[in-house]
Image 1 (cartoon, rainbow, N blue to C red):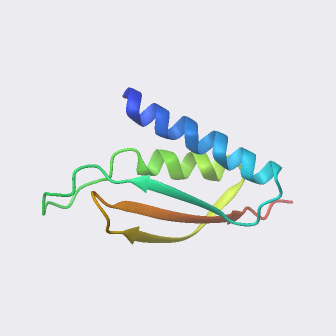
Image 2 (image 1 turned 180 degrees about the horizontal axis):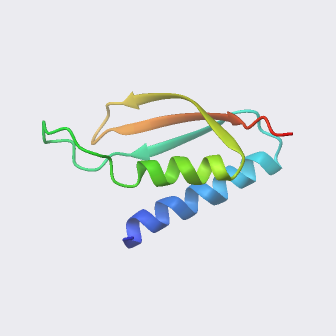
Length: 84
């Protein structure tokens, strides 16, 4: 994995764990999109890894949306996982 992808994953993990420790009931993660100038459909580098990392930390992906400013970002909204 590349340095940038690893950094995104590490930050997501730390932020998600901190939010749970603070007792948050919603965690919103902004994922900057790589080059969107192409009309070609393809996977989004690092997005799956970030979602999996946050879910492993104890969250469940509840909703997604897209912010179309600048290069664009995925907005990922998580709720705590129902464990037990």
